[in-house]
Image (spheres, rainbow, N blue to C red):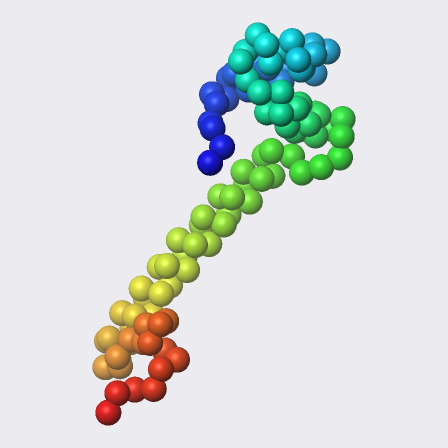
Length: 103
């Protein structure tokens, strides 16, 4: 799992890289790996419209939308189960739905 760094640190390092400071000197100064800094610089260039690609904000919005969809799907499953109980039906679980009923 990737390590999380404070947003302020990433922003200040990216600003310095975009201003022209070298990745190697920043890696030595901050003890961050060069690979991490190159990824950050690449994303900073995209966010500054200096390079084509998907901006950070778009990725954040997509992740939030996916979480919302998962929550709504879970809520819908609960509503369907409750409706089945109130209608006198047995709710069918996803795992047991494909099996033949026991006699």
